[in-house]
Every structure is written in structure tokens, then in C-alpha cells.
Image 1 (cartoon, rainbow, N blue to C red):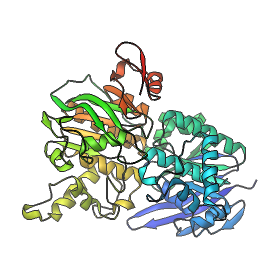
Image 2 (image 1 turned 60 degrees about the vertical axis):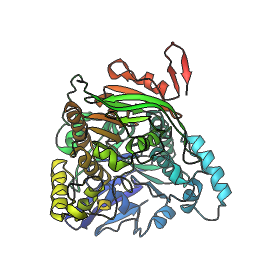
Image 3 (image 1 turned 90 degrees about the vertical axis):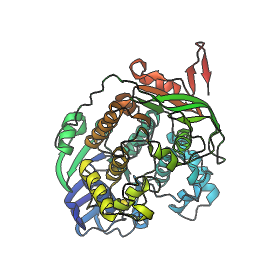
Image 4 (image 1 turned 30 degrees about the vertical axis):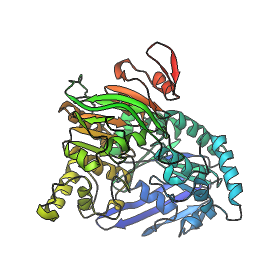
Length: 506
């Protein structure tokens, strides 16, 4: 039979690492084919080669039985190949519609593109406002723009690199319906994910990469999570052991916090009140775009507009204090945007330690370069970051490895309060287990941890209490032992039970 895509001996060498080593892979029309591997296994590089964004050093590629050399994403799209990147390829200053337009035939007027976005997003259950500037969108909303842009090209081959990493369970279910529809219509799909349940439920076939080489091919439905994990990382992820929390002092207190939106498409934070103690992990669930990141910006000091008296850190009013002042009191944070906020893409890992760590800054502001390199080297070793060394640029790391480095940088600071957004976004099962284990260690050492995540499984695994954010308001907190996925899912629509037992809507 004629394969939709066939790779023969694809090899790509970077300084210090062979990303792909004689990789061969075949995908049939209508097949959903998973590519599985730990962070740094070479999955994203392989997908970029197929899409024409990276040139291979050796090997051959066939599309619909014909040998092809794809020299650019534009040539890939002309063949019928679309890709949704793990790190988004959107221009912040343009609207969603304008970003989509850039990847389409310019013969279609922008107004028609806008209409088609609404049509396609409605058809597939992926809500996208075409008129919103991208810089006003949350990570989850940007993910939806990327997916809708790919679907609008009616591809013969669709490449998805961690497409559900910041989507809610409801949105994931809708996306799966869409992907199955596309496959039934003959579209071949290459699907990268670290979520083993997703791969087993969705994919027909699976190719496993380790260290840039193909180490196995399996039928996911016939495998267990444990067997897939062993294929991917050589072992099963360690089990997390969560003891009952031992509450310490009141670390972070928020009282009647009201902050207006700072852009026309945001949401107002309204009457937010909660307390966070040392020795506990509190999670915030919710559909992307309901004010979670606005709240984290207020708590971290990035947004200094909180009314006086509304945010206290260890009893001190920090409502108008900046990030540096809060770090001095022991508060550290991990933003949801890795590149651009969590790390500067063009700076080395050693230099990126200086964003939140002052250990390597000497008297008079002189940098101790040896200290910077030493700290980066320790983080690389402790958190098993695959990088060529402390001088590796942040943008050269895979998404999962960069996430491990950023998380490690803040965990290693031994914070008294840690704010974390999407802690294991794009991270493989082994690394995710390590990060969650480190969060539990921090909590057991007395740190107060606040986690924002759109992965309910993650929140149930590490948190002691849960809240839900909807339309800029917070639900009451509920102990994880007393919560259910159905209950949290209902609350995510803005409905929760008030103190009097009646349902209230945000």
C-alpha cells in the first residue's frame, strides 16, 4: 500500500547531541500514529524535519509514495502537511485571525478568514475569538488558535506536538472527537504526548524513541501505562506518597481582592479571599482564560495594582510590592509561559539563573560567572535536564527539559511560598513524577505551595485542597479527599454551592 508518510534513516546532529539517529517511520492514511519518548528523545526535532522547519543531515522522506525534500513550512503546507507546535508560533501583536491568515492562501480576504475561524472553531468545539490580539490570550487559548489554524488547511497529514498540554478535560474530549473525524476522512495524524492514557485511548499505532533512535513499535490499546512507561523511560515512574499535611504559619492571605482587567479581553478579579498555610499545597482548577494568570501576576508582584491591605505575606502587606521585595520574603513563582517569561530564549541556562536567583551576584552588582555556571550545572544534574551544559541557550532545549530547568531553579531556592502555573506542561511521565515529588518535599519541609493547573489528575495527585476559578471569582476550597472530578468539572462552569446550600454562579 502507499503510505501517507514514510521516513527512511532520518539523522540530525546538533553540537553535543544527535537528536535523530537513523529514524524510520511509516504512517498510513487515516491512521493516528503516536510518537512517544522522554524529554529530549528527538520527537520535536523529527516533527520539525517533516514540516520543513529543520533540515536533516541524512535520510529520505516520502509523501504519498513520492520522494520529497521539504525546505520550508510553506512547502509542507503546499503538500498538505500542517503542524501545531509545542512552543507556539504566533505573533503577539497580531489578532488570532491575522495569525491564521499568515498561514493561508492570501487570496482569501481577512474577513473571510475571520468567518471561517468562527465556523471551524464552532464545528470542532474549540472556542476562538478571531478578533482578539494574541498577547491578550492565555496559553490554553493560544493552543486553540494553533489547532484551529492547522484544521483550516484541511491537511492530509496533521502533526500535533503536545496539543492537550494546556487544554481542559472537556476540551480534550472535543479535540479527540475532531481527530477521529479527520482520521475517518483519510487524514493521517502524528501525535506527540506524554499523557499515556491519551495515547492508549486515541492512537492506532505507536513508535517509541529513546536517545534519538527508534526502540520499539506497539499498538497502544494493547499496552498498559506501565508497559508504555517502561518502553519510554526504561522504568515505571515512582509512586508518589502523600502524607497528611502538617499546617504551619499563615503564609499568604488574600482578602477581598478586586483588580480590574488590564486589557479589554481579560476578566476582572472579583472579591477573592483565601488563605495559604505553610505545609500545604492548594490547587486552582479552571478553564483557561478565567483569571488564573491575572491572579498569579497579582500574587507574584508582576501586577502591582492590588488594593492596599488585600495581599499579605507572613503578616506583611505586600499588595503594592514588586517581585524582588516578595522574593526577599521567600516567595518564588513559576509562570505558565516558559519562553519569554520563565526564561529568556537567547540567554544561556547559566545566565537565566539570574532572573530569580541573586546567589551569583557579588558586591557592586558584579556577576560571579563561576557561581552562575556552578548553579546551572547543579540544576542540570539534579533535575536530569538534557542540555549540552550551562552555556546552552534556553531556546535550544526541548520544552520539557526547559520546564524542568525553570522548576528546578525555583525549587532549589528553598522558597517559603511557591506559586506554580502548569508545573508539568510538556514533561514526560518520569520527569512529571519527579517534579510532583519535589513539590511534595517542599510542602513537607513547611513551604506553602499554590498550583494552577488545567490537568485535574495532577491537582488531585499533589494537592491537599482545591479551588476553582471561573469568570474572575474563586469557589470555596474543598479538601481533595472530599472532592470528585465531576464536582470540580461542574464548578469550572461557574456553579458552586454557597454557604447556605444554594448554587451560585460567578
